[in-house]
Image 1 (cartoon, protein in one colour):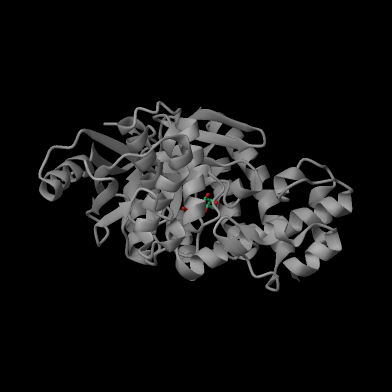
Image 2 (cartoon, rainbow, N blue to C red):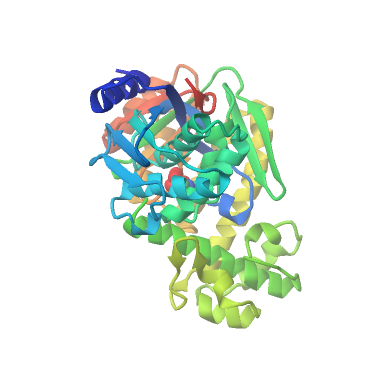
Length: 415
Ligand code: NG1
């Protein structure tokens, strides 16, 4: 059963009435531009033809009641629930969405049934599909009329409250994507540009066999990179004599010609406490996260992290040019270079992801790389149309699957 029919049926079964509306929210693949968004640097993702569906109706009770076919147990949360006090991880996302919407509107009770065919903990953004879908649902039920760009921003804020200091790529592409196009997203200043996919190109995604969970050690590892790149930005700004207000990010210094050269002068490892003293910035700017504080004593490999982020931002520019020129081999090389940088400098690949990327490339893909935050999850490959089945077979042989072709699809909306 497709997720829309499954969500509708689950709603009927659980609440005994018909839903008032249905929302469809796609997952996404990030083609290139990994770990650049929270540095204010560009990304090039697209929405996929796998969706989360939400069937919803207003409720007479002043509560959010939700049932999910993918996650147990069902949720019943007061409308003023504090996400930090909600123990069940998937309920925390629901509570975080209520929390970010509260200042915008008086909330009313709602009933939801959720079904999805986006593999969870895959790097294909099932979490953002849920948060964006919830916001579209509540926006419609409460007749708020908020633009999709605003809903994407609120969804990113909600996910930060739920624990991962996300940069905002996933929520924007899921809310704003168009069919058969990639979406280049810039953050400084904010901008979006669709880039049509040349005819005859195909994309394949494949599991590495290990999940990329949003909680626990993977969240710690993600937040360590957020803090590590803030440290690098603060130290580079100090070397360049640039004044940074607020939280330092590499996007603030990336456009300064000397920055890439000075990366080699950064310490190989340093803690936030020592870096704050050296760069003369308040420690809180480096370690404060939306959901807590990062340990200021942890020693972080900031030079390698900065090297990856600055080079990856350049690869996004080159990848946009390659797609616009319909140059598949050039795009493939950029994907392979991105993967090598994520493996060697950003240290967020795994042996299974490396083997998967090699297998898909050998099977005829022009290029492949891990997609999403890494530490497990999926890889993406680009190939000529007609070669998908060989790439998929090689991926399944290397890592056990699932592996499937994905089509750049439209963003979220009412079904
Ligand atoms: P995943 O792990 O694929 O959901 C995460 C972040 C993105 C981005 C990528 C790395 C969330 C919700 N998303 O994506 O914003 O930073 O890692 O490029 O945390």
